[in-house]
Amino acid sequence: MALPDTHDTVLEAGSVRARLAKVYAEALLAAALKQGGPTAADAAGEELSAFVADILDRDAVVSGFLASPAVGKKTKAAALDAALPGQASELLRGLLAVLARNGRLDLVRGVAAAYRQLLDERAGRVRVKVTAATELTDDQRDALTTHLAGMLKQEPILDVRVDPDLLGGMVVQVGDRVFDTSVRTRLSTLRTLLLDRGSSYAVQRD
Image 1: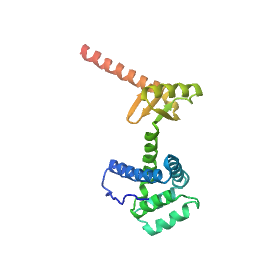
Image 2: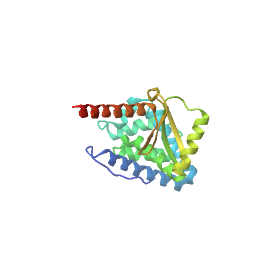
Image 3: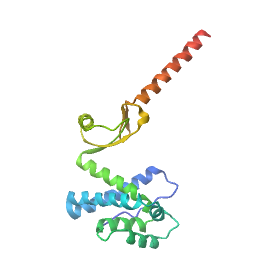
Image 4: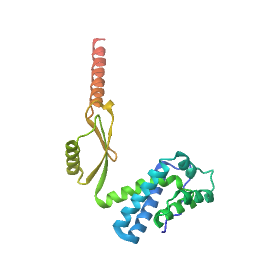
């Protein structure tokens, strides 16, 4: 699998890291599609996400070790061989090998996220973060999904989290767009409005 040998400096902004992660993700997608089409592309995404969830997210020591600039490349390569399951695909091994060779294993999570986004774009899907005051019922999920599908013209994939501090309503985030219908926000807005009116009234009396 041909993957980029690009480096960037520690001082460069996070957006540069995100773009670099996307470059690796695009290279992985191209290799997967060439190897076995959409099925192979989906499988590569699932395998990469599983590596992040089962190895990096579960063991902070391993994650820190692989990302540490103080650890040599050969040592990291040996650790990866030990960490990877025997059935790991050539695509995953190739990606991690290139990242290790370039001193970029700290980008694995970013590459996984960028790869998932590329797959979503190809399939017409969009990830939607939903924060609600209580768990949503199946009917509420279905209604929200239908509403968002009509509004976004894409298939929404809901990631629902519960935050009782919202008091009621929900916050829906699609990319950079946020739709906030929570009771907490309404109360905060009302409180600000009342304080502004109170200040205006005090000024008028003075």
